[in-house]
Image (cartoon, rainbow, N blue to C red):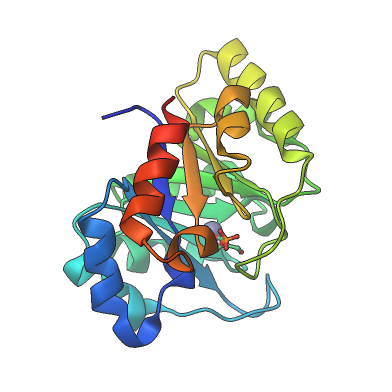
Length: 220
Ligand code: DX5
Ligand code: ZN
């Protein structure tokens, strides 16, 4: 078991065969389920909500990593805890009182994550980094799967890694959007710990093999 983690994004699964795809992830080398919740306000798309998450958690045997792309996420912290989320990630851009939101997530027994849009500088997290379990660096603009990877992400990962080291924090760095075997190794070398992969996994012909190879590459 390597220490770098792979989180398939269920957004790219076949929703008419959701149980089959969840079992595939259960039986693979993947570490987490990445679950994208979009409200059509914070991002220009609506994905799925509580009933679908409930259906996933019923069968999922791995860590549930929920990525909230919604405005005012504080309203739903308890709900996502009750639905079995292990990690709850909110967007920096959607939180007026981020520090308070992070404490509220942890008070419900979950790990607290913060996602940053491509235009948001990692420096904004410097004063709160010791309170964050996971930073999700968006390597595409949130809202859709299957977009191309933004190259500036490597710089952001290195800068964030420096902040984490300087502050002696234990925060994990997750990369979300356009991850493939072409950028995985460079992301890990820059300081990433968790790679989210949606289309690259679910649109491949042998999903189990794709996950296995990506995990091996991340830990090479
Ligand atoms: C984008 C989502 C991502 C997405 C990744 O808003 O947050 O998690 O599902 O999909 P791919 O890997 O296809 O870019
Ligand atoms: Zn996501």
